[in-house]
Each structure stands twice: as C-alpha cells, then as structure tokens.
Length: 267
Image: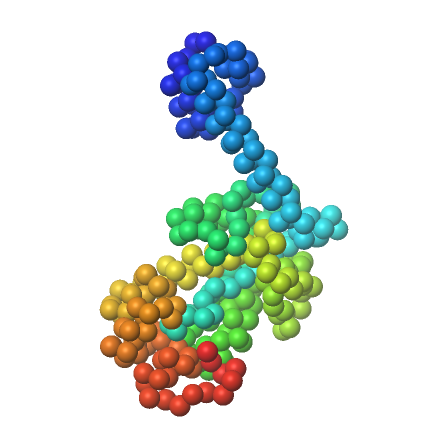
C-alpha cells in the first residue's frame, strides 16, 4: 500500500473520492482498526448515495412521466412568504433538464439556511430555465394574500424566458395561465422541480427580508423573515407598523387600531 492510512482517510473519506477496487481489496486484507474504519465510512457514504438516488427517482416521478411524452419544458412552481406579517410574497419557477438530478434538493422547509443557499446556486447553474416572481405588500393588501400568491406564481412562470409545456404546482392552479398544469398536494416534498422552485422562492425572499431589516431596523426581519413570532409581535407593539407590514393581517391591524377584516381578506 503506497499511501498511509491517514492519507487514505483524507482522500477517500474526508474528500469523498471513489475508492478503487485494488485499494479496497488491500484495506480488506489489512487487520488494523484504521483500515476497517475507512471501509466502514466508505460503505456508509455508498449507502447514503444509494438512498439519495432512490429518493431522487421518486421525486422525479411526475417529471419522468411528462418527459416520456416528449414534454421537455416542465416547470415546477412554488411560493414562499404567505403567512408572514411583513414583506412581499415570492414565487419560484424551475425547468429541469430531462433526466437531470440535483442531489439533496428537497422541500425548502426541511433544509437549513446554508443548505438552501448552496442548493439555490446549483439550481440556477444547472436548470434549463428558472425565474422568481413577486407580489408586493401593496398588492397583498389590495387583492389579499391568496391572490397575491397566485400573482407571484404567474409572474415567475412568465419570467422563465421559455414557455413551459406543462406546469407542476404546489397545491394550486393558475386558472388564468393557458398552460397544461397539475396541482400536486405537498408538491414541494413530491416533485424535484417544485422543490427546486421552493428553494429559489425561499432564498430570494429571505434575502429581501434581510434588505428590509436594514431599511427598517428594530423589527428583526433578517432573523424571523417577517413571520409572526414573539420577537416580531413584540417589536410591532413597541415600534408600530412600518411600510413593509401587511395592513390586512390581524396583528398589524391591532397595532394600527384598525377593525378586523372579514374572513379571507387577510390573515
């Protein structure tokens, strides 16, 4: 064996290179615990990769069925920011290349911020097309959050640069978009395209809330992203509402001394 066990661990465990058959055979013949530890670590990585491959195949079931019908431009669509008290709502649209896989892409809510940022960069690099769309606070207060979410989704689809042949949408339908589409309940956990769209929507909106934290300091927007957590509600009661707050949402209306809206007008 030309390399020491520490060098082998660095190459095949820490850096994740594939273990050649001849090196694996030598390690299996090596009685030292360090050799067995390297083999065990490599096997765990192989098992994780097989499991991830199976997960990705399952996550691509909707896309594969459409690709098999020669529909190349299949767009996943999802939104982020429906329930916060402040900030715009953002939607993402992603068209993956037929047969492509991006490891670790999942429902954005299952990923931490660092993982979402890493994957967002990879999605933008590898996708055939991607876009984000927005609906402003003013639009949310004018047409209500439900319709504003759909508006952001439509804008994301329109921003793709290519016309999708089919849409996969997380639990919604875009009735005013003349493109065949499929509403998938919990789609961000069942479709890779929708999951990718959810990551772009979430990371884009989080970045915007960090900008709003600079514009309107004291509310903690960069930490809670406008969601109605205790810190945000306390700051809202202490400072009052700022222009980034949604006037149709209950806790904001309370602070402003406005009466409650009828059901469905806000949150």
